[in-house]
Image 1 (spheres, helix red, strand yellow):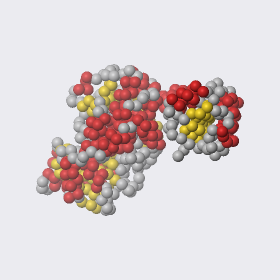
Image 2 (spheres, helix red, strand yellow):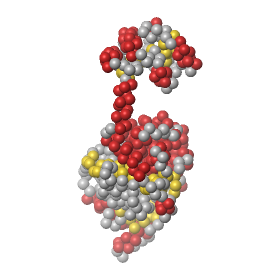
Image 3 (cartoon, one colour):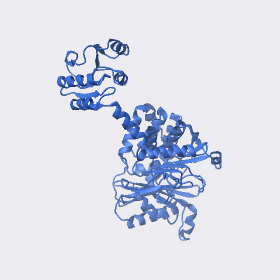
Image 4 (cartoon, helix red, strand yellow):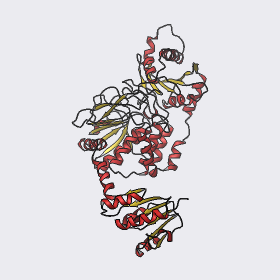
Length: 530
C-alpha cells in the first residue's frame, strides 16, 4: 500500500486532495480551520508543524509539499527530504515564487509544480505549434460550413467511424455549430449494433437524396465522396478527418489525414482534448472501442498516439457496457457463413481460399476470414460470396511478408475494385463480369464464382513478391489558405494506401471494405471503407 504525506495545505493542495484516494493519505497543517475542513471531507488531517515531518509520520512513500507560501514550501521540502530520503518528493512552488526559490526547491524535490510555468506551457500547448494550427483550422472550418453539418461515415460504418462521427458532433456542439452523425447502408455487425444501441448513440441513417437537407459535409474515417460512401461524387466537402491517406488528392476546406495513427478515433480524441471538451461516458466508451477495434487491441499499426488517447479516455469509460458490447450473440448468418467457409476451403502453400455462395450479411465474410487465420498452417485467407449482383471478397494475412492489398489489386483490379492494407484487404466484383469468363465454364453460379475468383487469387499469389510494403506513405494535413491539402512523407505505416479501388468487404467489425481511395480496412474492413 502506498502511503502519502501532505505537508501544508493551501488552496491548490486542498483541490488536489479531492482527487487523491483518501486511504493512506495524511495531511499535516498548522491551519486549524483548514484541518477541520479536511476532516469534514473525510480526509485524515492533523494539526502540526509541516516543517517537522518526523513528528507526524514514521514513514511515507510519497511526500507532497502543498502550502501557498513559496519560502515556507522551501523550508518544508528541505526538512522532508532529510526526514524521508527515499520518498518521492513533489513540491508546489507556491504563489508568486521567485525564480531563485523555485530553483532551490527543485534542488531537493523530485518534481516541482510551478504554476507560472505550468500555465505558460498549457497556454502555449493550446495556441502555438502544428497541433494547435490543426485545431484552429478545424474550428474555422466548422464555423464556416453551412448548418446543419452532416458528419458522414463510410457506408455500413464500423466502430471507428461511428465513434469519430459522434465525437466530431460533440466538438461542433462545443463551439455552437449544429451537426449530425450520418451514415448510409446498414449497421449489421452484432458488435456494432450493440455499440450503438447500448450507448444510445445519436446516428441518422440516410436515404438517397437526404443529404440535400444539410448545409455542410464532413467525412470521417474515409476521405472522398462517392468512394466508400453513397454520396454523389461531386459533393462538396468541408471537412475530412481520416487515418487512411489515399494516393490521390483530397478536397476540403480542412483536411487532416494521418497515416501515423491506428484509428480516426485517436485523432478525434486529440481534438476533443485540444478544445477541453468534457467527455460524456457514451462518447468516451465509443472512442475507446473504436481505437481498440481498428488497432486490433493495439497489435496492428498502433502508435504512441493511440495508446495516449486510450489512456486519456479510460477514466470516463463505462467498462460494464463496454464488456457487453464486446460479447454480443453471434448471428446465425455468421455461423452459417463460417461453416460454409470451412467446408468449401481450398488450401495451397499456407493460403486458404473459400467460396460461401450467396450471402445475406457481408460482415460475415470478414469475420470468417479473420477466424480462419486461426487454422493450423494458414497464414492468408480469402473468403468470398455474392449478393445483389456483386461478388464480395474479404482477405486477411498474418505472419506473412505478402502485401495482401496489392495482391488483391493484381488479382481483381481488372474486373472490379480491390485494395486494402498489407494484412487485410477486399474486393467487389460485378457478377456480370463472369459473362466474359467464356462459354467453356459450366456449373452452378457458386461453382463459376469459385473457379474465377479462386484461380485469379492463387495466380496473383504465385506472382506476388515476398517483400513487405514500402514504409513511406502520404500524410495529409489541412491547407491554411483554402487549398485542398498538404502532403508530406510519413513512415510508420506498413499497409499501403489503397488507391481508388473499391475494396469490398467488411472487417471483423462490420465495416465494409470497398474503398476506392481510402486505402485501408476501415474499422477492420478488409479493404477500406465500402
